[in-house]
Image (cartoon, rainbow, N blue to C red; front, side, top):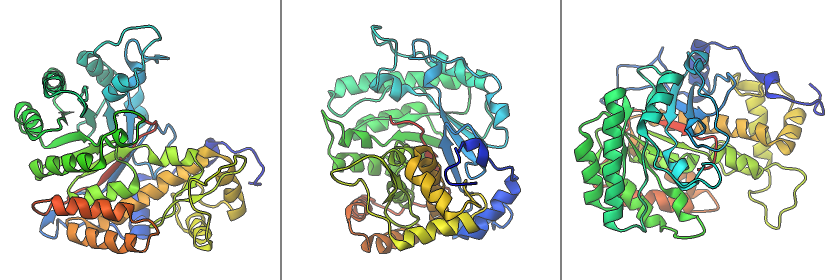
Length: 408
């Protein structure tokens, strides 16, 4: 393929089998797979790693599990779409996570212009889930109304109680609905946990977006303290942290005991020209736009060597087999190409984390050593801050990253 030839994603959809992908994952990362895993690792059951990439409509095997937001299917949504009835059949060999989209509906007000904001109906979410179809090992997130830090305790509790009611309504219709734990104070968090009953799996919002919004920002320390509080209370459960898919932050959460996360960093960073490099900071590949300050560092020779390694050795890399010149041109000119590359490298970071399954201390030591070499100490400071606040060690059994397709 010549580097100037128009490129479409259809040109690079692979036809590999699930079994071959598992073998590839083992070969390139050393992570255990279904065919090689022992019954126990460090005295705990081993659970294979999974990544859920959202809204990717093509069958790339590195995206062996997918997350889809259903926001566009609600009554009153902007550019409302018809609920797909054959959706689950199309992705039969994938694991699926359905995001109810409640946060997006409420915080971004994605409804028709001029309409007054309405509280979504959890039965609408149920209808969407049932029509799209699901399997027993899928994750179906309840519809929830996130309370914010700046609200009064009374206002937050009103939303929390509504969330519990929503969960009960949805769980009576679909038994595998996953509840979302909300609250900023300990008694608020306790209310949610106590009133939804014992579950094997929970979700909790990261609220990281609140630290960078223009108004009513929340301090990072409050965000981190809240997450520590939740994982302490649910240490023996599978907890998914929503909206924390930045690979570095995800690795910290995994080390502290969270089992899954989702986020949009891989796609958002691609839009700014950032290209992910495994175990390193992003580098900058983008032509055409001038920046007063580049959003990432300039490429190094080691970055080029990494990309050459992917296209020659990683058979499930979306652009395996391309020449370096071809791929360099595409990375510099197409955000969609950077996004797929970033998603694959995020997958590699997850594979690396899962070489430390049931060894959180080992993962923490690895991250400290890795970030000690970095120019910025930002993530090292976050790691050390959260580790100090964990009262007892958390044990990781399974690490998943759910990669969001849109900024929420």
